[in-house]
Length: 151
Image 1 (spheres, rainbow, N blue to C red):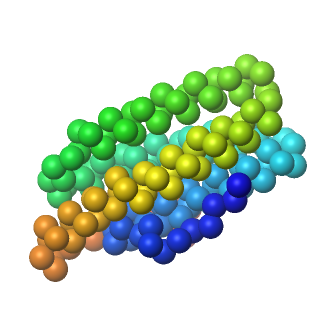
Image 2: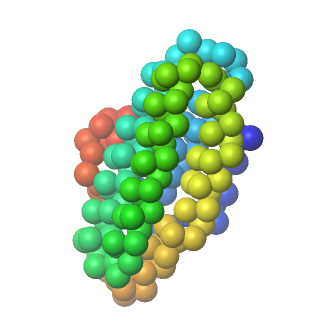
Image 3: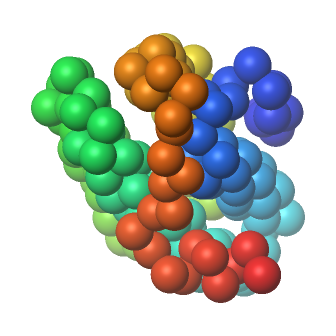
């Protein structure tokens, strides 16, 4: 299942929105690699996992910066996904099944990502835009690697 970015998923924070778009691209690229039985799957999977962790750190830092009242709940959802992904990565590393990995990406990660952006992350954007009263800070994130990727 290829994910097509929909602008309605934008939350109004440029760094987070660009990271969400990149996550969609990375998931799509990994699904394509699985379809092609590509040799670069382990590296692509590792990059996706690390990029996701960077994104979660940036998103959580943004929440703390703006006093988002549902920070703990949101962080817990991130922790739950990390545990699920860790289990699936371990299974992939153990068995090497690209069909298993593709099913996980299609049925779990893609659906979780879309749902999380549409519901949980939109609440962050709505809170910040309503809380900032037009004086929104330009959040730059916590990871220098992401900035280097964009250059």
